[in-house]
Image (tube, rainbow, N blue to C red; front, side, top):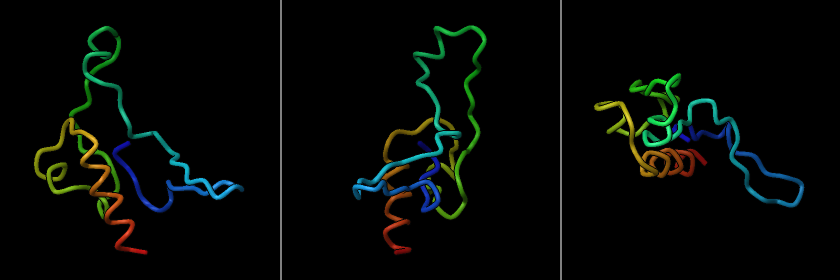
Length: 78
């Protein structure tokens, strides 16, 4: 997702948690290799308050751990 924050976490009428706003998420490099018209975005994405240290220092592609960091920031904020 790369941009988890309170504004992107929703609760539906049944109380289920939903994640929205996938504008900064990206497809895998393997998929992008199949697409000639898509370029790999190496930029840091996300909201500064929730971006993990490795994203701030290195940028580029990271796994789910950057979303765990952001979710931890959301829990801390609560």
